[in-house]
Length: 313
Ligand SMILES: *Cc1c(COP(=O)(O)O)cnc(C)c1O
Image (cartoon, rainbow, N blue to C red; front, side, top):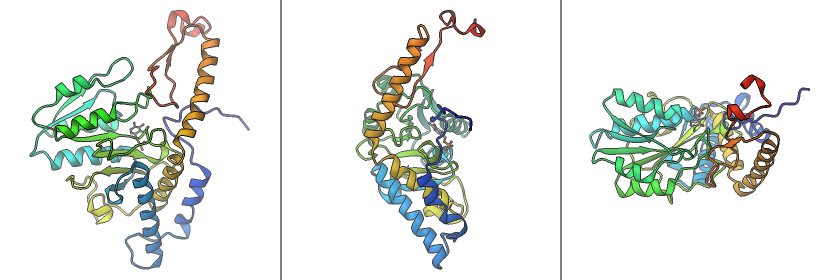
C-alpha cells in the first residue's frame, strides 16, 4: 500500500477508531428520533445529552449552554447572525480581525448588508491582534467582538484572556472561533470571559459535518435554522445522533491529556523544522512565537535563495 505522510491536520483529521466505534450503534440499531418518547428514541436522547456533558466539561461551561450544529461554520453563523440580529437595538457595531476564517468574515459581510458596521482589525506580522488597536476600535454601539482563539494558517494563539476582560469591562459580548484550539489549548470559558465559542469535530479526530456552539446562558440570540423544537428551540432539525456521539467521544479524548499531546507534537514539529532548516537554505519560519499551536508550521521559501528548486526561479 502507498504510504501517505499527511501534513494537513489543520484542514481535517482522520476519525479515531474509538470514535467511529462509539458512533456505529447509532446508525442501524439505535436509530430512534431523539424527540420520540419510546425507548429507542430515548436511547438517542440519552446519547446526545451525554455528549453535551462531555462538550461542557471540555470547555468548563454549563451543559445547557451547548448547541449542536452541522459544522464549525454553522456554529460561527449561528452565533454571529443570531446574537447580532437579536441585539441590534443595543447597537450595530461589531469588531473582528482580518485573519478570521471565512465562516466569520463572510458572515460579517452578510451582517453589513443588514446594516451592521464591522471593524476588521489588522494583525502584526505574527498574526497577533494588537490589544491597543482593539481598545480604540470600541464604540458606544459595539455589541460584539469576534476574535479567533487560534489561527488555522499561522497557528497564532490570540491573547484571549485580555480580549475577554476588555469585552466584559465594556459590556460587549465576546465570541471566539475555537475550531483550531480545541484539543490543543486548555479552555475555560468562564475564566476567559468567553460568551460564545465555535468548535468542529473533524478538527479533533471526530467526524465531518458536526460542530457545536457554546452560548453563555442569558444571552439572547435568534435561531438561524428555523423549524422544530430541537436544541432548546434554537437550532431546528432532527439531531445527527451518530455525529453528536462522535463529537462527544472525540472531545473527551482530545481534551483528556492536552499537555502530553502537545509535548509529543512539539517534538515532532522541532524534528521536522530542524530537518527542513538543515536541508534548505534560509527558510523563513513565520509566526515563530511561543504563543502558537505546536501542531502548526508555517514557512516561506524565499525565491532567490531557494537554489535547489529550479522550477521556482
Ligand atoms: C475548519 C475551520 C472552520 C470551519 O469548520 P467546518 O466544520 O469545516 O465548517 C472554522 N474556523 C476555523 C478556524 C477552522 O479551522
